[in-house]
Image 1 (cartoon, rainbow, N blue to C red):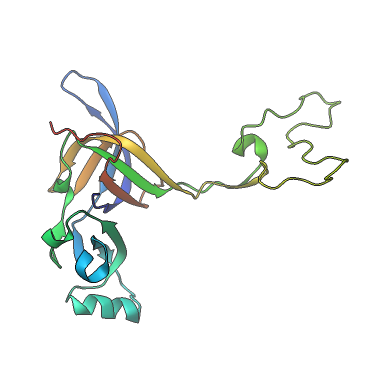
Image 2: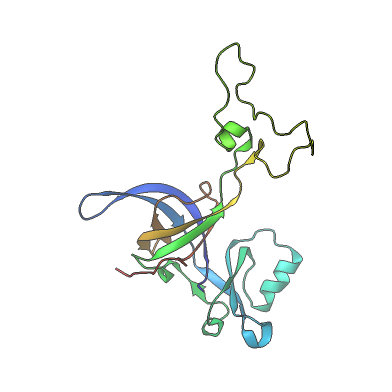
Length: 212
């Protein structure tokens, strides 16, 4: 198990490799995450660390008290990550983007862009009906029930509903470049969310990480 570093999606750009090939990259701004709590198996029953990021201008009283115990300014985002050895981390320790190296493979999680209420053709890629003027069936879902027993619509079918705004994880994305001075991580491919949205970056679970 590896920790999830919090960051913000900045957008996409192109990077050229040594052979002149274009690499589409997503840019993640990840300021140093601060360790605000360490949980060990002896006292908490499992190994984990709590990371925080971002300025919190109007923190709640409970948040202020939690950060006051460790003498750290209140942060906006807080995330707990399961790790194998939590004892090697210390409270107030900063974990920067150099936790990842060029050539590593990572999984990036975030909330996808919301697209509102959509019909079945856009949401579920239904083909729709004939486009002729005489047809009364164009972009509808069609029949969903039956006249005979049980005479009702079964739940769980594909209907028009809300689209997007779901938690999405893009796996096995290669780290193309890490800029420690600017706190930037460049990963190959697209990641969920809009510009400025919160994302979580962790080392890939299903693919071996290779340095180089």
